[in-house]
Image (tube, rainbow, N blue to C red):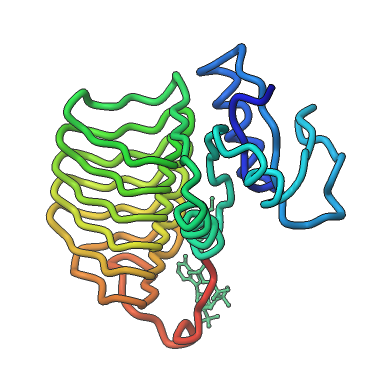
Length: 214
Ligand SMILES: CC(C)(COP(=O)(O)OP(=O)(O)OC[C@H]1O[C@@H](n2cnc3c(N)ncnc32)[C@H](O)[C@@H]1OP(=O)(O)O)[C@@H](O)C(=O)NCCC(=O)NCCS
């Protein structure tokens, strides 16, 4: 009897499996993956038990979307909603979450993540290793706050945006949906929807117009 499905069989799924083990040591975990070639493979000792058909056959088992790519994770979440399947939230015991914060279904908080007072995280958002999202932020769905990123208070981040590793966002900034904030960027001005900014201070960069990496 499986207690929780981890959807995805890549590197981020390993982080999620270890967070589940730390938070729920007795939980029986199964990995789901779209690639039939991965069936029977083991990820940190956890078997890839099947694909979407397997999840549909076990509708009571909650699913944590464990794909780092925002677009792919979003697509899995949309599918689970269509199928009326339940999303599981995974919070590593080494994360710190304010009692007044709200964490949406399907979110993953990695070791050392901090979510502060009255911040709201939408469905399927990742706050990765050692990243912090301070007070009164509104973070959309399928956002990825990369390792070590620092989001100050009252920041807004739209759906499916990536905040790169080690980036800093100063207080009160609005970042649109489907944006990329490059690794190490320092964001001091609003970021328009669908754009990619890098540097300190962060700005649109020629050469990054076609940047699509999530
Ligand atoms: C911004 C980013 C998405 C660009 O990726 P890309 O489209 O493949 O861009 P390229 O590597 O081809 O670089 C294009 C130009 O942007 C510059 N650039 C790329 N990333 C940059 C960054 N983070 N800061 C400053 N400049 C950057 C490159 O130096 C290059 O400049 P040039 O044209 O003058 O040589 C990527 O570099 C990045 O920072 N990703 C963040 C990933 C991350 O943190 N994920 C979380 C992992 S858990």
